[in-house]
Length: 336
Image (cartoon, rainbow, N blue to C red; front, side, top):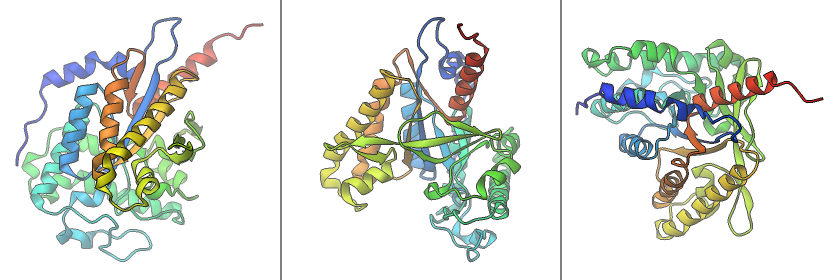
């Protein structure tokens, strides 16, 4: 199914909200609380539409970490060989049909035009904890080629949007490792391939991204959850495992939704009332436990993103805001 592309009106609305996205605040006011939401995999077209609608309603910008095997069908799987894997293997599968792939490409382009950040989640979702820098480089090279050639490979090269090649070649600047497994070879490969941030780390709580040789590194935090307040990684899959041992349990979906929302609210309030460290929340393009975590996210963002001193931003925007704040802080003379 063909889809109309966004009009100039969308571009104008993005420009009009740029100050909000940057987290600008009046002189003397507290820094805005940043909320950074990301989605791993980014393959289900229905959830692309659902997440983009949520973003429009709340004014949020998201990060979509794309797995590149969804850019082509199973019939083309032999073109892909992950490091240390058999040719044609993928832990997350491939596109189901050519039509599905074409629709996915349209969703990616629309999200890009709407100001969202499209990042890389590699291709076949393998654990790269023991991969060398050369292994990662091979994976990144395949991702880049797959994205650049996607419209042609899908047989609809004439429908490729003007600007797609620049986007595919220059705008994929962020990465998250599958399974958050980022071995010793990753950083060198990221720098070699022009990435400016990595979101593969885990921290004990919300933390500012740290810079490593020009690469900004973000960490998903551990946040308290449940009556006992036991820490859990702020990601839907980890809540899924905590709540139902990773087994779908739709009967308790409403209860799981309330638990997740309570955890999000509590983690947010602690930073909002405290140091205003960016809060990162991670999700997948899978609605686990009957959609409990996506519903909790919807309610949470509806509550917080419209507040005047909150900015719901992508990783790339957060990186720029944090860098500017650090620059400003260094420029302020210290009192004697």
